[in-house]
Length: 395
Image (tube, rainbow, N blue to C red; front, side, top):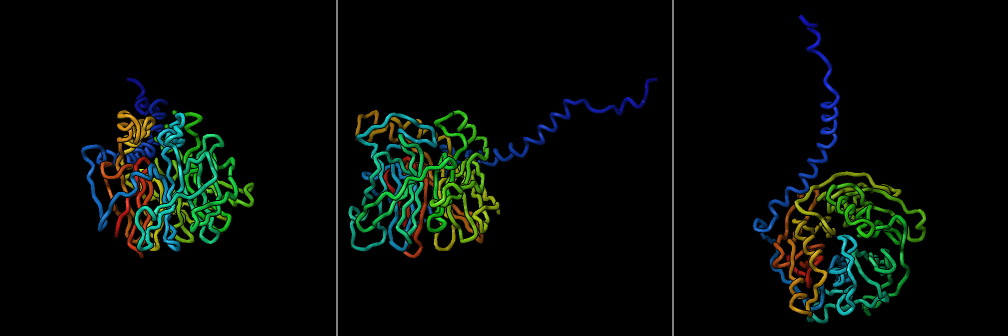
């Protein structure tokens, strides 16, 4: 008879390595499942439209296009809009780098008076004068105490930076204060004002699409935490520091004086941070969402409003198809403007959790990127990354 102890021989190395690999990747696989599974119910043919507003309508389709960000300044009863028709051919986040069409690629920052009575729609919307020929704006932030507007500018020639402008809202003019460029702000996306001179800025990627479109996409869809949140004092930019790492960090907004919210477009969620005295951040909670969150805003009830993209493949198709878009061009150029992607808007609060406010398959309003709301006046605005006009809603 053979040695009976042979039945207790050690397992071979290969199964042990496989088990260790599975244990290591299982959390990542579950995370990616959590991120991608909502797209199944948001795919074309399955997406269910809904809205919770008293009324809503799309305005300024003939004047505004591709408005990425909106900020409401309730003390002035105006909203700033960041719009860029040239995003069809120049989108450094999505990886579109086509030659400019000077006849239609005229970006602008607009001021919309949403509350003054007696004004017609033409008088309510004015373009802000900005002495910046290479303007491709994304995120906005406004310091009402100093009338300072911060504009994330993905310029073609100067590279990405932040324009710091002093704004006269009554005359619709601005004066350039500075262009803020910093090594830590390599892919700036959104800005939040901490106080006079101090900012939180998100970088959406570690690997820029201009350097490697493939690696940038891998970073996006893998959920790798390549995005960052940077604290910077514009008086002492040399002291800037990374205070958080977030997969595809996008919108950023204060929930209150001690909590900062950061949107993740690849993790499909809301990252909530405790703000420390030295402006560093500690992760408090992650709220998962059924859509890739784009920009954030916070209303006077400390509710976080978010807009985003529930079906990423449709948004990618839009970005890839719009390079020849010209609303006033040939039949083919007009046709390429018609591609749409679904919209989604929700609100979140610690008391009530996550609540959907608006869902559209893209035929009514496409590619929602920001939602803002003035509860006292009962009005809100939704912007679309690749859409004509803005959606005005009543609550």
